[in-house]
Image 1 (cartoon, rainbow, N blue to C red):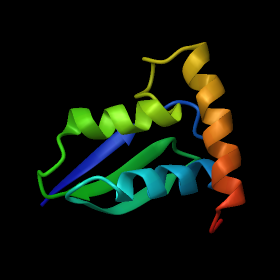
Image 2 (cartoon, rainbow, N blue to C red; image 1 turned 135 degrees about the horizontal axis):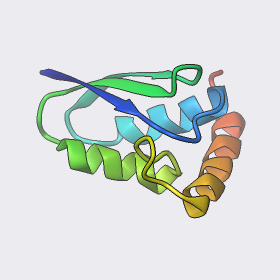
Image 3 (cartoon, helix red, strand yellow; image 1 turned 30 degrees about the horizontal axis):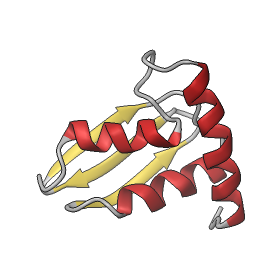
Length: 91
């Protein structure tokens, strides 16, 4: 089991965190997802069933690209993901 840390852009609040946790929980081998909106980080455990690239791609699809790699499209996606997270939220 390896520990991975992603520094992501557009991470604003608990709604964002909920969307990220829910999406990453769907990936094989990913567990223990911790999202820190203040730090802009996503920490997780991975048994290797999903690659770092696959996890980064899942984050990107939600609008949370690795720091410095996104643009306006990802920012817009993050607003939608945030709203969905707030609707289905635990935070």
